[in-house]
Image (cartoon, rainbow, N blue to C red; front, side):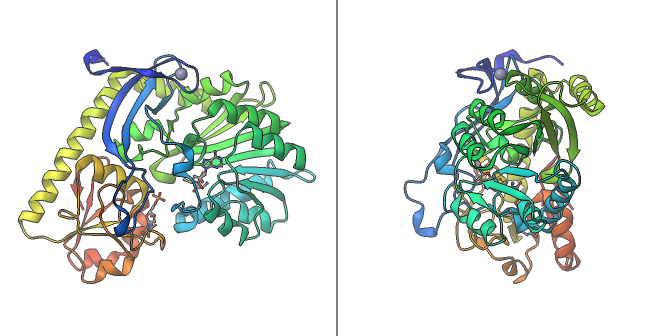
Amino acid sequence: PGARVSTIRHMDRRCRVCGGELREFVDLGRQPTANGFLRPDETDGEYFFRLAAAACADCAMAQLVDEVPQERRYHGGYRYHASGSAGHRKHFEENALRLLETELAGPDPFVVEIGCNDGVMLSTIARAGVRHLGVEPSANVAELARAKGVEVLTEFFDERTAAGVRARHGAADVVFGANTICHIAHVASVFRGIDALLAPGGVFVFEEPYLGTVVERTAFDQIYDEHVFYFSVTSVRAMARRFGFELVDAERIPLHGGEIRYTLARPGARVPSPAVEELLAEERERGLSEPGTLDRFRGRVERIRDELVALLRDLRAQGRRVVGYGAPGKSTTVTNYCGIGPDLIPFVCDSTPSKQGHLVPGSHLPVRPPEAFADPYPDYAVLFAWNHADEIMAKERAFRESGGRWILYVPEVRIV
Ligand code: SAM
Ligand code: TMP
Ligand code: ZN
């Protein structure tokens, strides 16, 4: 695939993993923090930054160019509640049960979860009576986890926190993270912390959005302030090596539209699964790390924006009622990048109580409870929570039966 070199911007900022040169591949414009939901009286002085992603020319790691300080992203008012969907609850319960049967089956095991959020995973571990600790800087969700019997340290994970945990609790058999490791910009400190904390035969397991899925499905709405990194097997293997670990397994999982669960161990401690080489070969064949691939991704992103905006304007001109369904972080990226305001989508409904009565950051679409959806049903609903499509479409079957239609924009704009 031929790179259109003229479109690549060479950045001053260096790769957060290896210090290599960053090449920008997409610019989603001026954006607020994705979960910075506002009360209607809080819109003055809203925080914005430039949301652009780049890939490292040396280690291939895809990452944000500019970043938002972590204290502005994770705090006592963090809106994302991991237990918010039945699919997530089931997935993380299964994860916990699997760990209990495998890595945590020895005598007096200990597991640390980085970013345990509301305890969606650790609550199952706690019920099994297994020693555990969640490290979760967002005090409000940490409190929800404690209410489920989960032990939580309200801190950002880094080498200092890890040393404290090690001193108080001893070595961990498993350090786990889900949809969290890609959020942490201080990656070298995280790995020094893992090194200090992990038992010699222990594993560091993390599951995160997959660059391969983002590119293949043109899921550009996965790009937002919290997702500092966009991992691939290629870039994670390089990162593991750089920080003294070995990638021993990589497994595709269906969460958030398609993720990968990575397992890292100390070099030579485990026999690597053939899945690692298989996925590496697949990434090479697809040219996932090549500038031309990322360039074409940008072209598709721009087309989705143009088609979605044209469709919504057209429906408005025809006098059709259109609302949004779900206010995930992804909806902030799409609505701000496309310039979709309440004139095109008067409100979105979302089941998260702390988002209701608030505005989507930047685009200021009002968020209402799910009951507003049927009161009365709109003609069209833009499914921002598209990764929960099966669950939502099943729950809202009556909407389609009443003649309503869903609008999807990933992997392309279509009405179903
Ligand atoms: N693990 C859950 C899941 O997969 O649904 C929650 C993921 S949530 C998107 C990311 C979580 O990581 C947030 O609860 C946030 O507060 C936490 N987090 C962010 N930076 C962190 C850090 N440096 N150390 C520990 N947790 C962090
Ligand atoms: P997520 O994609 O980051 O998990 O966020 C999904 C959002 O969609 C979250 O704000 C909750 C919302 N949601 C609903 O409103 N109704 C539903 O049935 C589901 C599954 C999610
Ligand atoms: Zn790099």
